[in-house]
Structure formats: C-alpha cells, structure tokens
Image (cartoon, rainbow over all chains, first blue to last red; front, side):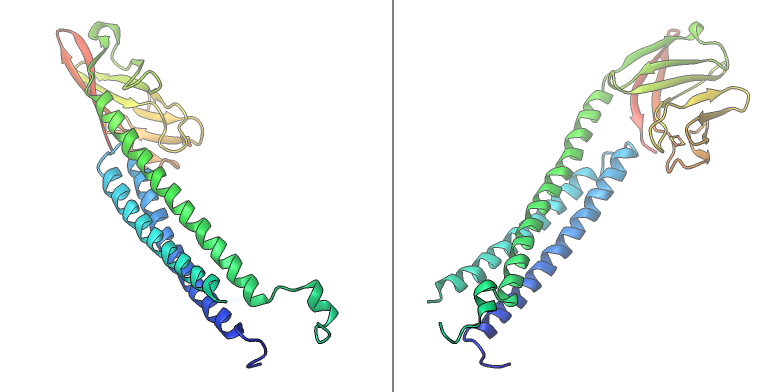
Length: 83
Length: 162
Ligand code: FES
C-alpha cells in the first residue's frame, strides 16, 4: 500500500483534516439550529426576551464557522502551492 | 504512459482526491447555511421589535354596554393581521386573548356553556379565565391581551406572553 504514488499519503492526511473541519463546522451549525429553535419557541410564546441573546450567540457561532472556513482555504491553498 | 492501465485513463480521479473535494465543498455549503441560520435568527429580533412597538399602541376595543355577560367581541390587535377575542366573563370581569390557537393557529372561540375557549381543529381547549391549556394538542397558553377599562370603554394595551 505504501509508496504507491507520491503525494497520496499527503492527500489522505489533508482529507482527514478537511473531515475534522467538516465535523467541527457541523457541530457549531447544530448549536445554531438549537438557538434558532429557542428563538422561534420564544417568539411563538409572545415573549421577546431570548431573540437578541440567541441572535448574538448565533452570530458568534457563524464567526467561528467563518474562521474554520478560512483554515479550510489555507489547507486548500497549501495543496495548490505544491509543484 | 505505457504503464498506465486503460481503466486508469477512464477513471483518473483517486478516491482520496474525490473525498477531499466533496468534504471541502460540503463544508463550504455548511458555512453558508450557518450564515443563513444567523440571518434567520435576526428575523425574530426584528419581528419582536416590531411587536413591542405595536403593543405600545392603545386601541379601543368596545364599549362596555356593547357586550353582554357571556358574550364576545372579535377585534384585531396589535396589527390588522392579528385576530383577537374579547370575552365578558361576568359583569365586571373581562379578558382578551389572541384568537390564534397555539397549536396550528386555527381561530379559537368561547363557549359560555363550558366556560372554556375551544379550538375546533383538533379539540384543543383553554381555560377562559387564565388562557391555560386544559386539553388537546396546544403546547402553550393563549397569549393574553392586557385590557384597560375607563369611562365605559375597553382598551387593549399590550400582549402578555404565556
Ligand atoms: S389548531 Fe387548535 S388544536 Fe390544533
């Protein structure tokens, strides 16, 4: 299996990194889904107290996701830099 | 070139490379959806603000002599799209609720005989005095409208959440 093709092990490693990033983004996104459910429930109950905190928390989650996306681009760029 | 099998020419992409690209694209898509969820959450902030603004308005709902004991009057509050129901439970006892069932938004009606507010869609029922759920699928009480009575007139001024 080893040494079949140059760069294969590297590709696998990067693939693993991307998988890890994907799982992290997914976890953060699930937190956002939970937050929007709370906001909806609060809105339907004619309360207006949780909309803003959940909005801000969701924004923080989105920023985390953007940061992870940047990291993903970095990983991607490294691949393209390779001759 | 001679060492490359024919199938390799037809399927030049390796599994590893394929996995890499699909995972990368899916992650990008997830971030996009994450942004959309954030914006969606903002909708509730705006809507909440709008409702709080609307609830500052005091509107006249009825005159006291207009509604007999056990009678109701339908009105719209806080906006023209929000049906509401005013109920005269006793001589000096008035309550008002949003008329939308908290289950799936069917209009509820008051039954003087049973003293309950009933929803015909799935047989949900609320207590007329408090708005709490008595039976059926509604998950939460009816939002109550705050009333103000002065000089024989009844005014609505705000919605109280469940
Ligand atoms: S809509 Fe009222 S009980 Fe279902």
